[in-house]
Length: 365
Image 1: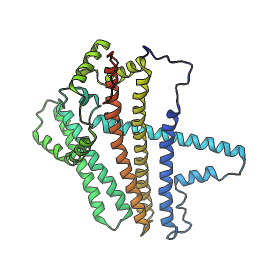
Image 2: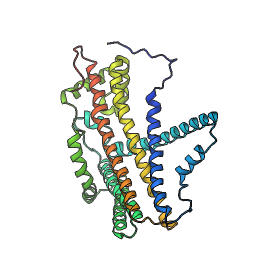
Image 3: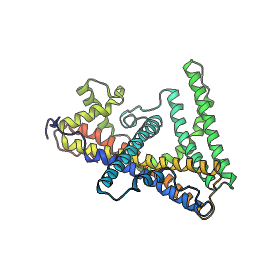
């Protein structure tokens, strides 16, 4: 086991993963959008022949790029341009995933994993945090259903119950948002916050909590590290860095990652592999969410503003395709959180503790 991993500064600090983790989500979002546009265009072909519905954004982009003379040099240029476009789309997907899935879903809903993996007395100590986290959890549930039923209503406009359900879900979200703002206003001005706010937010997040608790029970994402392991981690962290791990916040990840990378390259590769798996899954989930949102926007614009309705059996095909995208995005978000907590985070903390022992004991159970 080497004391320090040698890193050459002259080596390009990029690997194949750094490109493919961006290219694949970018390619997925473009292909899935193209697939949806193709379904929608076919549904309008008989009703509105020659109306130009085939030239939706992704179709138009592909048409402009690939309809070129068969010249080798031009085709090479087209390949490079296409790769750049896919890479740019992947960067946009990654940025959106970082904001909505890392900052909103992980941090705002649960806090970073070190909180419930390492802190013995983990709990929401501040009332605003108690209210805020449950607000975000409930909002994810109600906004997901609002978006899903809104898209289905655009496909089946005659079924007013779909619009009613979507509007009700969104209205519940707006009421909870106003209650959250009022709660924060009162709390920051030292006014007493009534228990009614607590009861309301618990009811607001109840459906989400019931579903997620079942998933977390299966995935074991709420299970903390063993008490003995957690105590050894805190002791070594304090000795190595002079910082209490309970107050170190994100440095629990950064400092331990630096330590593992410096001390052992093999453990470092294992930890980074799980981090890359979680990041790739996160980006793929975001790509399908983006396509679902794009499809909903196209349907809203084409159906409501241009009056292009979708009739059977095409409406069924489009509904199945979009529900499949929606379900796949939700599934990948669950997988992302599972990899992030149960594999990457636990592997990192166990690897850090393992490096302080002389006996060769596996850091993973």
